[in-house]
Image 1 (cartoon, one colour):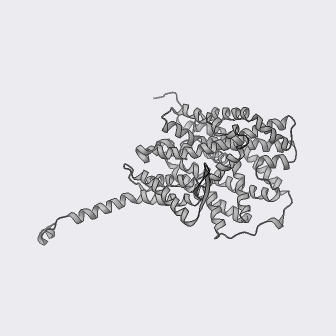
Image 2: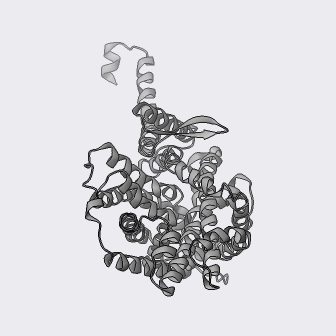
Image 3: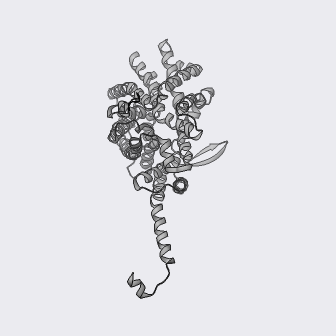
Length: 457
């Protein structure tokens, strides 16, 4: 029967659109931190790229494996969590949504700032005068940013895919121009690090940082993969768009830190870009990068939280999630805004302790066929958090953040790996251990029979 509604195949994303989605998601402003982080810790450019390759390859594999659910059932993270965690599903949805909310505030702040800078540059302002004056117009720019966010996001995965299709080529063009511009700049051979070695603590920590970068979306990838044409499309998009984007971004960030001393595109564009067109192209990137990342990575998780935890209609949840940017972006705390952004960025190395165990439980359910009609999945989640927290503290892989002037230790990047492994093993092997225990118990409780009766049986 024809209902007049388009079928799934009418708007399912093919490999090109899904690759653009993954690339536009990866092309965020904090991406440029990865190169300087490697450079600051003594890694050579080759070691930085190797860390980006290995770290993100792990994410791509786990993300794509978890994305099978979205393609198979055409449902997102909320239903997937409900199927796995049962009546406790709101807990993982809340934890993932919390991380999305924090990043939404950071990206919306940067995106709104880019809008103001573009406007001020267009009417004749230049240099540091732009940045200092830009903060006063942030509320208006944030309203524009959020309005554009909602216009696409309320259409669901189709709107996200359309935004990526429009923005992806512009983001790629800026990456291409930046690579060409860097290739023409003089090198500084005396400043290039000789490396730290791939078995060093510095390299392993950097590897974990690269892995944690998009470990967020590996949890709720079904929010996006439900719009992919097939599972192959998810793999292609993740490998080419996400892994490729991380490699390019790491290379550009490293070279920019080495040759210009700047990190953020805002600074590079205003101080080093030659000519009006490259500056405008760069400023457009500074807006599109956080905008597309919010659409594809941060808002879906935040919308899931609002929809599932507070039982709000999907479309209303999408609008509420978008509007929440007014509270999450620290534009109203101008004197402390940048420190708040830096604080959230520092927290990025710690939230793996929450997301790793969630992903471990989900993968165990999908690929080991663990029984989840019990309390075991939620036990696996909290056990994974506890194990990764304890292990990180024991090996010294933790940072200390201050809350209300009280220092609180937070696990470092390695906690993501520990959390996945521990929750995966517990949930995956738990039912089998229960069966073995039950079988052993039944054998012990079996009454003894005469030898002749046993032989007859």
